Image 1: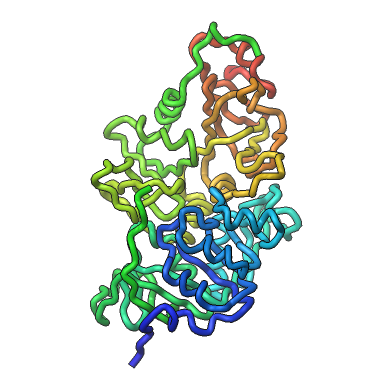
Image 2: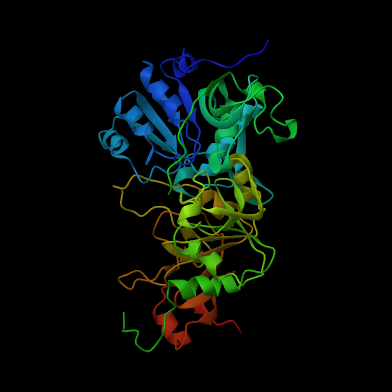
Length: 226
Length: 220
């Protein structure tokens, strides 16, 4: 019997190694798995690279993770507003920031998931963020080459899940979660609702279970009004 | 800069309304942060325009009343939104595929500067102290079928934002098609800015006096 369910957050995060690249779902706090982040904080894993669209403003858990000093680098498109925990480390040179255009983050992750080692994009051509990157002209237009972004771990927040790891997301909580779930060696999901196999309509599954390794059911809070 | 008592610059709402007037029915439109977010209020009733939000929404509706907020729905600014009938939700790679793949008819962004060659600078100033942030601005600028800019014509000090060459770091090169300011509507043509419309009371000469880049009359 295939059963990807785990009993708690500790089991869900077991085995996350030092130096891991961790994809963190969410756009702001919507779709960001707070309890899995707390679980990551509770491990001893250090020298982490976190891939997240934002730097944790308004997030209960992400600034706490930065404050542990165990994140070596944040790969991010919009680290503003900037939580003090990140800003202090950044100003002190204790955390690296790789600023990447939002769509390039998504596509680098998608490429990694789909067996594409690199791709060309028009985004960032002729700008500071495109400097030093290989460029190539196609049909009269310049593109920069971007490489796939592989990851060791993905932390995902779903709305519904079954024991095979099939997932659905709620509202704009989907955001980066489905592509991140596809791109990591170990994809860990927290879900608000665990449902019986067969309860999710096949036509309505957002993320097929093949991409998911572990699922833990958490009565997490809704995002706060904003 | 000379006093402006002789002319009536558009206020923020009038600027948004002026631009909204030019969006035809059926367009799929992404709106950037700041001023562009005012635009939906001024789309005439009954004209179907579909608003896209980079975080995975087509069919974004107005801000919800406080007693009917779904906190799982946010826009690019992370404010709660509503969905209109016919809306759809999708993930980030699809959303930026729509953007980069040229599927959106229009993107409207704010900016610090727009140059006569269509360059846009809207993501960073030359002050190195700020923590840099780009979000989706470069994808939207490089990928949209049409990029319009909605911004004040001048800085608070009266300096022109309509320039020969951008002084701030570029968001994308050669992509802006039209600029709506509080003083004018300008097309970006092959040889520079063409004045399509001006604020009430403004002459071509007085607009040029407030603009660093050279302006062209439309009937050349």
